[in-house]
Image (cartoon, rainbow, N blue to C red; front, side):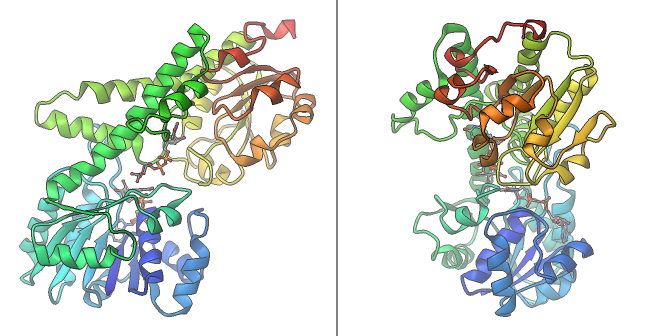
Length: 443
Ligand SMILES: NC(=O)C1=CN([C@@H]2O[C@H](COP(=O)(O)OP(=O)(O)OC[C@H]3O[C@@H](n4cnc5c(N)ncnc54)[C@H](O)[C@@H]3O)[C@@H](O)[C@H]2O)C=CC1
Ligand SMILES: O=C(O)[C@H]1O[C@H](OP(=O)(O)OP(=O)(O)OC[C@H]2O[C@@H](n3ccc(=O)[nH]c3=O)[C@H](O)[C@@H]2O)[C@H](O)[C@@H](O)[C@@H]1O
């Protein structure tokens, strides 16, 4: 099939590359010329394991190309995939400006029947608006189909080739059939439904996963008070098939470009029809507060943070990505700076992106984990990069000025910590916490 993909962010680029790997002819379009130039030079603007190799292979085979010329891409293709951003407005509602612009651009370029597929996450009713926009500007026949995307950053290629399910929302059986045919090599688990339900499936899925995370984080907070271990609790719960083991890792809360934005958007979608989504509002509140656990733990151990030097390990919102959108590290570092602390920060790959969000004279950007730890009063681990797990804890203890380790992702085992002299605190594992109530002067 001949496919144009509009937008070369995570979703557009990964889908485009994977569809070309499946033998389709794909043209990826972005309005940012620098991005297209990079892609044409075989470079991937995002960090996504495995993507570059397949991209270069398919570009060399002539099945995959990149352009800023949306019109030509649309005219050469049968299927147009919209994968532009839908960021939050200050109200929490999804900003549909990029979607509407893409719909107008597509309409003005159409010269024949096209299937317009929306992969961006859009509020219920948006595909209907896309249809109206295109029909208002073009006399050519077309169908709009909603195919929400469920890939995760950091494992986007694997997720795309091994989806749990494909959801297709369509009004027309023939269009649904073409889109089914496109996805059939990936899975037999294809659910065809109406467009509004498909749009809702995406938000409901992300909101449910966010709920699981806030739920286990609250259980972790209670575990700390009653002396239970949240990792055992999650394991014990996860063996129940009705619950399942995934998304039960307690930590400092979810971040990233999607859960925070999509939970807010769903609260707004419900609010627009006079429904107060109380459960989801609490999920969001719990998530925001969970980040502050790190600060509370630091204050318990160090007292006043003014003048203290704090190491931050991990700036990306999760490992294996350089994406820092809504990363918990942003808010935690801002709060530490407000409290008068200075920061020594390190992330294996996300530092350059992070500096576009937060930069300050009191932050030293380090190029290795141990350099960041050097001479600090405490270390906070915020992203569970494998390199942090593999660090020699004795060397780490000697490198820090004070042996205080706050593990926001429960990376270290009880045995490993027991072999060290760290004052240690993690999330929901009170039996491992050591010396948490000792103030710095006692160390
Ligand atoms: N990032 C992720 O892991 C996932 C994202 N999604 C959803 O997919 C959508 C896209 O997300 P990302 O890939 O993160 O987006 P992004 O914001 O990283 O990238 C979007 C790209 O679209 C381009 N663009 C915008 N308007 C354009 C136009 N009219 N013509 C050509 N290019 C245009 C931008 O220049 C940008 O490069 C969002 O709705 C998001 O919620 C869904 C699942 C996973
Ligand atoms: O709509 C989207 O954009 C995507 O959002 C998430 O994917 P992603 O944000 O890439 O990453 P996740 O692996 O889901 O992690 C999100 C956040 O939750 C946190 N998390 C995840 C799992 C867990 O058990 N505990 C936990 O705190 C992570 O640290 C991270 O900050 C969903 O998992 C994807 O299915 C969806 O397509």
